[in-house]
Amino acid sequence: MNGRTYRFGLIGYPLEHSASARYFTSKFERERLNNYSYSLFPLMHLDEIKALIASIPGLQGFNLTIPYKQSIIPLLDQLDPVAAEIGAVNTVVVRPDAGGFELVGYNTDAEGFRLSLPPVFNHTHAMILGTGGSSAAVAYVLKKMGIEVLKVSRDKRTEGTIGYEEINKDVLERFTFIINSTPAGMFPQTNAAPALPFHLLGPRHFVYDLIYNPSQTLLLKHAAEAGAQIQNGMRMLELQAELSFKIWMDKKVAK
Image (cartoon, rainbow, N blue to C red; front, top):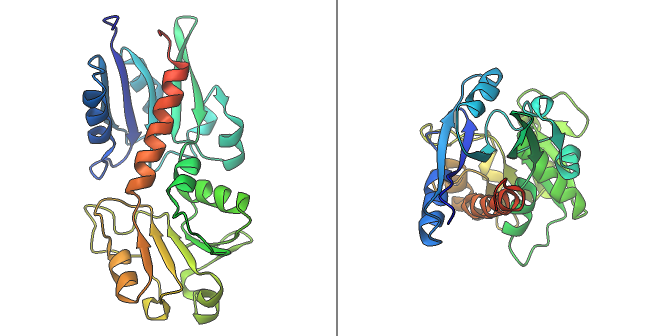
């Protein structure tokens, strides 16, 4: 140990649902990284981000969550090619530059999602609920896997996107892998769920909620009651966190 403090954190709003600080604190304790810390930085307005970063001595990097995974991109100095293709960033390296700093953006959500999928996976059509940054990462992975993707939005705007009212029996007969990338059902609003026709779900369906707090959302509860396979987002959280940390360690200022 060289006595230098290495700081990391999570920027987004709100952050009361997040398990990232607990995960990294446990990791640092387990690996005896006594001069490493991870904090939550709730930020209501993204235009405050550079002032926030400048105010945190020793900040090596940070993660991004709702609602900034896409809107951060114009504020970055460099963008990793994968993140550029996805159009969303959840990991940023802070690099000193001429008395200030540069921000370099990456995406570990995509690989974290891919690695979290079950070993036996035979779905060919996927329906993603939501069109934000996490949705973009999931869609990127699924398309790389050769899976046809249909997105669902409350405000349908683009080709390949439908409204929730259009989800019917025919759609669900075809799109058997359903991923929720919206915050509906996330702590503390745990009584909410995306507007799926749950009575049309069954054993052929696999419902994956990227939310991990609570561990079983209302969406997953209703899907399980209908006979569908379910999975929450905790494994993805852990995997993307480890991938983020590897990037920070590869790029950190002082070895």
